[in-house]
Length: 66
Image (tube, rainbow, N blue to C red; front, side):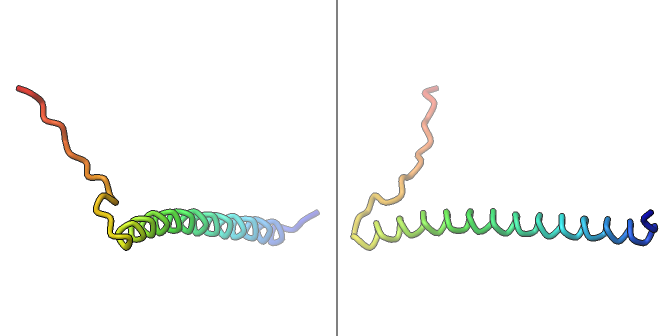
């Protein structure tokens, strides 16, 4: 039979392990998003370094004919 202290210790370990996993997943997601953003910025910079002027499309709102 397990003692109450051993049960609480096991629950605390599982909680700590779960929190650690969540932190690692959040860091991995943040890393992927950061790398994606840096890749896009790098592509724009490469385009500008080639002397092009149409590297970033400009969104022009459409006018409603009233």
